[in-house]
Image (tube, rainbow, N blue to C red; front, side):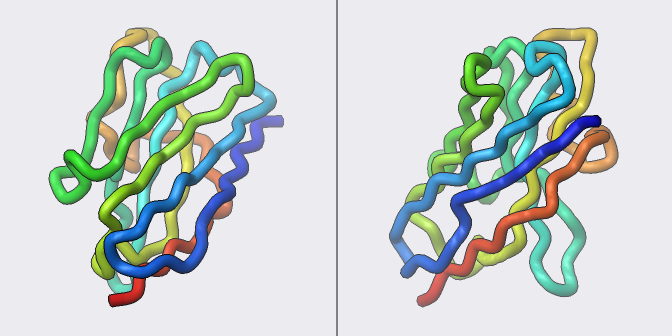
Length: 128
């Protein structure tokens, strides 16, 4: 049984930082691309940052480029999202997801529809 569990969300002031963690189990971590997605009230779910199964391919949404960094630790089967210079518009529920890929550099263009296994989400709230 595949499980994806996020942690690290919270409340932060604008300009602050947070680090989200996501641990995946029940699958071979080296076989999956991992991604972070977010959904704000009334908006569609969007790709934030994704990383390929070998960790060498990454994809970021335009709104977070230069501010967010994604990384993965195979020994801990965990993916991280370091979020810096947070802004109120980053407020959303953040979800972690995994998908099997045959191409080790593939991030599936960080599109939510391409990801199979999802966590329950962790809330990030940024105050102005």
